[in-house]
Length: 472
Image 1 (cartoon, rainbow, N blue to C red):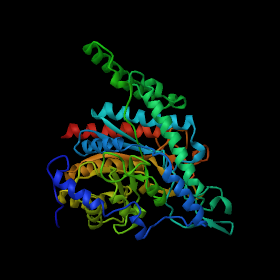
Image 2 (cartoon, rainbow, N blue to C red):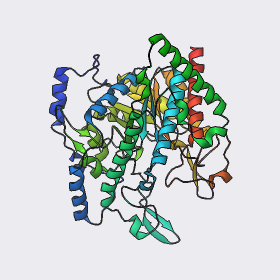
Image 3 (tube, rainbow, N blue to C red):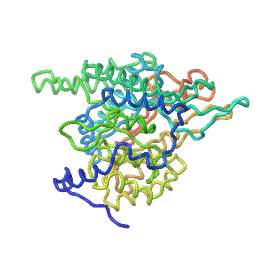
Image 4 (cartoon, rainbow, N blue to C red):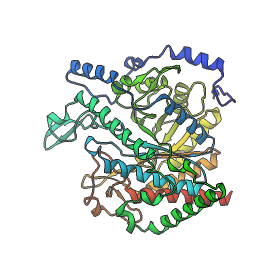
């Protein structure tokens, strides 16, 4: 198997950077239009689409190039085992949920999970939210039929509406502008919360959510909070002053780069930097359904300087994964490429090891991340989609074991979760059953972990890693 080019130095050399710049000139944000594009809607009014895209190109970006490059450095540190990636959020955001309480709850659950991970893993955590742009979703079928009526599938609020009417399901270009506006609102509120001390480690008790106080995990979490408080007071006693750096945390956003006309319109060049940046998000990823090495999505992703991710599902082979690595990170740059495996608990032991071994033997620098959600989705006899907590937990445990056995490093997790008190996934500390799903099932697409299940999963990760450390 041919090896990838390998560069020992952390940064790209001047000669290699020159080559990268030259190659980037051969790529344009619209290069993807010459490839086959999967999962794209057909807009009935091309003129209205072009007008909306022209307006979108003039709007302010949602993130900055220096934030993107800072995240690349943090992900490079995660590759090297010096921090851990926590990526999570809604399966698909909705315009209706762009309100302060929903956004704050979503931020709270990620902050509390990161608190558990920092305390238990004894390393920094890179926090990346699946929000401020996660408005498009791939679908397994182009159309949906109900009571003899067939309409286009719901593809996320950026494209059409979830209501089962011809008007709602018609792709609407105005939704592109609405998605940008809602993403900007979300980003502004998250930044205001973080900069205002919402994530202050001096007061982690402020992050609590009222309904979780009766959780079976509440006592364990409270002990953890008290331990962190004592450690912080001890450090400040030694320093003789309050440590203000604990008042805030870095927080980044991500979404699936599915709707290519939207991503193209927000791909920009910036002063004092070479190349192109997707300024709609810090960390875009390609889903399993659109990860064809010769497809439009991979063509688009190869040209941007953001850190990028690719979902690796059960149909992937070592050869196809290596092809993706070569196209998306041809110069083996650190912090550039995350491979997010989502095999399902029944298949991970058979399918993941050959892929890990092939990438390891090639010398490729990648960030390995586990998505234990998507491979474990099932549909109940009543038509409700759900996931079982035990299967999610088990796939994650197996992922840690498989990576350790092969000498690779699982450096992050990718989860669909919410800070709301939903009942969408079965099991967990409160042992939710099928009858509970109807009580608070709110997702329009895929089932999410609720706050309590998310926190429980973070604690299980810590226990798993601590157990492996004791065995080593």
